[in-house]
Length: 505
Image 1 (cartoon, rainbow, N blue to C red):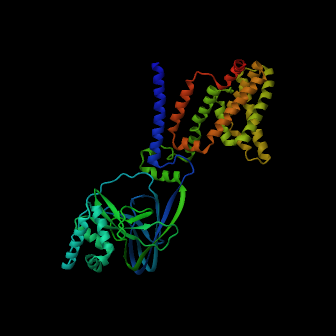
Image 2 (tube, rainbow, N blue to C red):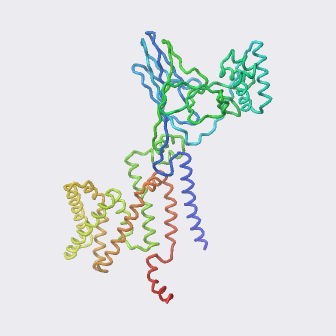
Image 3 (cartoon, helix red, strand yellow):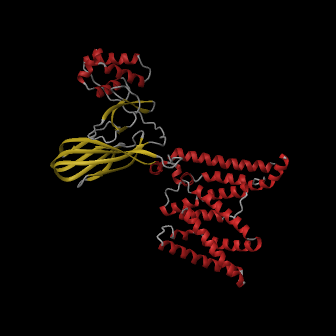
């Protein structure tokens, strides 16, 4: 009794471990549970135009770095004749173009490909920024104090105070203090001055609303308020709190967007394009920071990946074999021969594989019948059959190729040694049990091979076994459960059909 409890605990642990690991890999890497999922990526292009004076030129452009809600997939530049490098200035990334001599109109391009963040990002605690001093003249100071006092009385947190202040500035005609301040300072810089004056750290950021096919776009200014160890984004016009959907923050540090030395009349315009890629491809490019990147097969060379893709399907074929033999009661020729034949069908496809396999085994049985009259020893007989099977496979390959069948050459994927042993076993079975038993076991082997092939070639099965290898722990648990089955097989129940008829009569 204790051993059975221990057995079921092992099976339960295998299932729980497989499911937990599968779910953790899915959450941390973003690999979808089903194949065929597509995700949206954005290609954003920044175009810099200016007029060079005719000497050395240095252009620096603020470029995105770890934008919230997005992950950067790739970045590139198009700037013939210019040197380019990425410079980190106090944690802020800037792209720098340099050239020894340039004159006249110049155009530089910076492109970045981004995708929505699918893996939850850990919240980081930013160090508290320093407040800057704010100076007003006497009328502005009075208006600012009254405006802040009104917003403070209707709020309880820095976030709510920011929203109330935006509401007051949204209708300057109804508030003389707001009208006075807006007459001297634009809305966004005014909000930053007011909030810093109220001892709430605030900075200006800029971003883009991502819309497919848009050109000649400019950055939209927003404000960020520092509270509870992080920055909170606000729309300075509507007071909306948080990052809007499809809003890409380009400039996060409040630095200048573009600096040009050795030129004039500079401007920056943005264009964007939307496209779709496989979610698996996206996950492979973004799982670098995940612990599962070390436990996945995606880092291996392509040749090794293709080999593992086939090997990881073997447990599925074993599951079908165990179910058909133990639960259903199908007889097969050999234990694992149907699994190997199913693997061969993956290369040849089903119908050509079936025809080729039946033809090869039939020819082999005819020749094996002749060899039995020569009284050869077992090793010599098996070796002879192997050579004969090789010639038969070559004949079918060349014959199919001459007839123009593309699948003719794929019969070489059949396991030669296994087919030779199968011919030998069927020949002995023919002599001992008769042709009917040969037909039963041969048909059973092909039935199991076909069922295993259908399950192994299913896209969902191939996707799960390759991208989530831990699912084979569940397969092992199911095989162990079926291996512990001691009841009647389904085919054995037909022996009791006569008893049912007697009981009914």
